Length: 397
Ligand SMILES: [Zn+2]
Ligand SMILES: [Zn+2]
Image 1 (spheres, protein in one colour):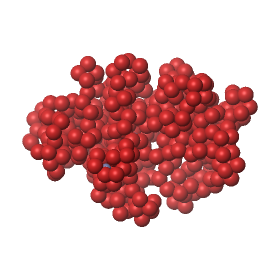
Image 2 (cartoon, rainbow, N blue to C red):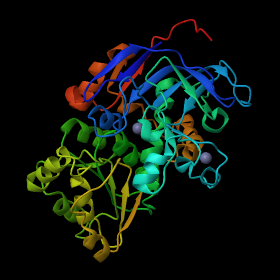
Image 3 (cartoon, helix red, strand yellow):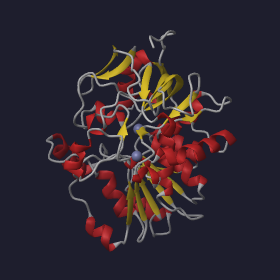
Image 4 (spheres, rainbow, N blue to C red):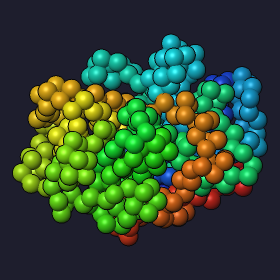
């Protein structure tokens, strides 16, 4: 089958690889009908995530049709169209039982590595390095999905793939980021980053009753999307001083909540940004926390900092004094997609929230190398790429 494979920094190729097989009775094999390139795939693309190996199959956003199930799978059968959460959860461990699906204790066979660095590990993730289990990803014609009964959700027949694909990752991720802000009616929420997660967080914040939603980015077309699609007030950080502008927009107090939907590859201006860039490139610092520092500075006293953006390691010059002095709450973590999947699917079904507006590019899986490049370079107004694999009509299974 065809699959998008990692071949080193800024090098992905569409390779022919063996089709996945059922390895465990709880597995299902899914024929991918639509897959996306996620902003966090760019961290792999740019070589910021260790333990990637040549030939690893990428992709953790995908929907498709079941073609085969293991003998222990009870709720699904071949022919079912399904949504596949990006993280893999067993459903049986203490964390899964508590609803902390992304912290599953059983789905990452390589947990030893993260335990050494972080003290503990999270769930396995499709197509996201050997740190997260070394699972083959969904930018492919077929994928093996472990714990099928636990993770999968059937797609209602009236909904197309594009309407549901973002339930696999960016919609629940943006939603959880907004929920972590504990938004009260009329709250002011500022969101750094108008990529898919940022935009989903803005939509979700609105849905939860936020008053003013402010969007911060440097790309005019993304800011425009935030304004027209999410009702946000756009601020371009290359043109104005963000903490000052946010204070002016909120009666001098600062936003009640600030969401960092940028993460470890933040861009910025000035000396501080240059400092982080140099340190990261010398591997003296894993992440560039320029946006995060600004969030902490801008947030009102007693406010909440919510971080859906991915950080992988250590960051320098964290203004912990400001966090303490201002009494800020910091909430973060990988998304518990399983928890949000059904309720958010209902919002999509009812037409309350439509997430398709973020799609700017549709291409074939074969065009993935070009797709990664234009997405990474933010060329051509690219916000979100979805790809259709031209799946083989016959499987060897
Ligand atoms: Zn993602
Ligand atoms: Zn579990």
